Image (cartoon, rainbow, N blue to C red; front, side, top):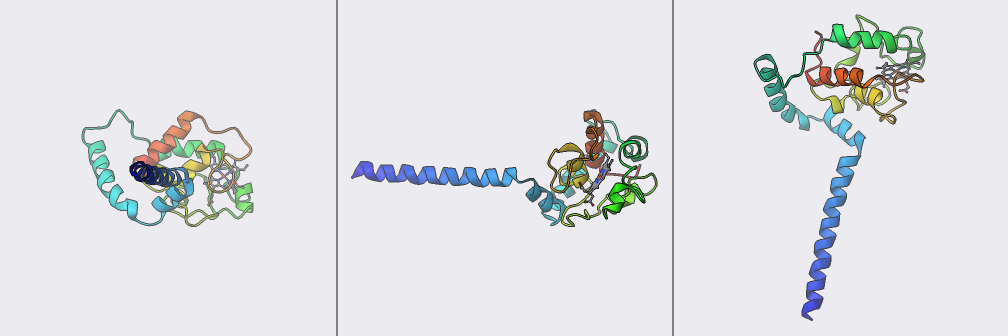
Length: 177
Ligand code: HEC
């Protein structure tokens, strides 16, 4: 009798444990959930408000953690001009495919930052301060982004350094600097 009860308890505990693990797994493994959540609702804005606020204050003041400030004009636009603008410009392959995103100098910034993806309007192209909620980063970093193919399409991936620059630029608030 006793041991039956004990066994029942053990089974219960195990079931609970597996449930928790499953929940953790599904929450952790679904990239589009992360993108949606961060891009869309403002659950994480409270988050960002406090962390972002601190980070910005610190970046300007003292605690830079050794990260250089990334410049959109000096560091990011040249990556786009070399690797992306051929297709992402009027008459280019992306334009002809109905993608509004142009990555030429002078227009790229406004078409990227806080703008929805044409392919999935629930996703944000660049979410300032939140690289992992930014489709732009997923598209250059992942072989299976949430929509479409890895960019640059049909060409070798960007270098790790270039990808790191884009990540840092977004992390630092995606400024037009
Ligand atoms: C050979 C042409 C080509 C090149 C080069 C290219 N793209 Fe694209 N891009 C496309 C096409 C076509 C699509 C739509 C289909 C897709 O997402 O795979 C697209 C879609 C995108 C999207 C999603 C836009 C949206 O609103 O959903 C992003 C972001 C993007 N490209 C970024 C880049 C970046 C950054 C580069 C350079 C590193 C780049 N692309 C280079 C053709 C190209």
